[in-house]
Length: 243
Image (cartoon, rainbow, N blue to C red; front, side):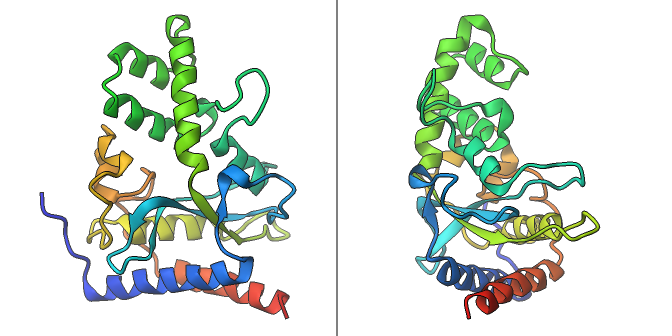
C-alpha cells in the first residue's frame, strides 16, 4: 500500500518539531548513546525522551525519531526519567547481564516481538513472550531474546527534554508525548518513511509497521499543534538556563 503524503501544514509542523529537537540537541550536547549512559549522567528528573536508530533517516538525510516516550504521568508516580530509560536499556550486570525485563518495558516488548518474527522463532516462544509471566519451558529462550533486544536498544541514541512536574502534580509530559507521536505517525500521512531494513517492519502489529515508530498508543490520533508550542517553551527554558 502506498503511504499517504502528509498535507503541507503537517509537513511544516513535522519540520518544526525536528528543528526544535535540533535546538534541544545543541542545548544538551547531542543525543546520548544508551549503551554508554548511566544514572550519573545528570539526566533531568522528569522529561520526554526521543530515540534515534542507526540507519533510520528522514527524507533529508537527517536522523528520524523512532520512539517517543515519557514517565510519571500520574500524580502518585515516583519514577524518574533515568529509571524509565534504564528499564529500556536492560541489565548491565547481575544474574543475567545483557538481558532485561520486557514485562516492565513495552518498548522492549515490541522490539522482542519483531525479533521473534524476523528470526522465524517458534510460535510458542512468542506466546510465552506476550504472556504475563514466562513459560518455564521457554525461559532460557526468552533470555536470549532479551539480550538481542538490549543490543538493539542500547545502540540507539536518545535526547531528553526536561519537562518538570508542577506544584499541583500536573505536567505537560503527556501532552508533548501524545502530540509528538501523533505528528510523526498520524492518519494524515507519516512523511518520513522507515528504511527497507527497519526491524519494526517485522512486527506483526500494523500500527508499528504503518507508523514507522516503536509506539502503538497515539499513532492514529490527530495531533495537537499546542504540543509544539510546549516543546518550544521547554527548549527556550534550557537556553535561558545555559546563559
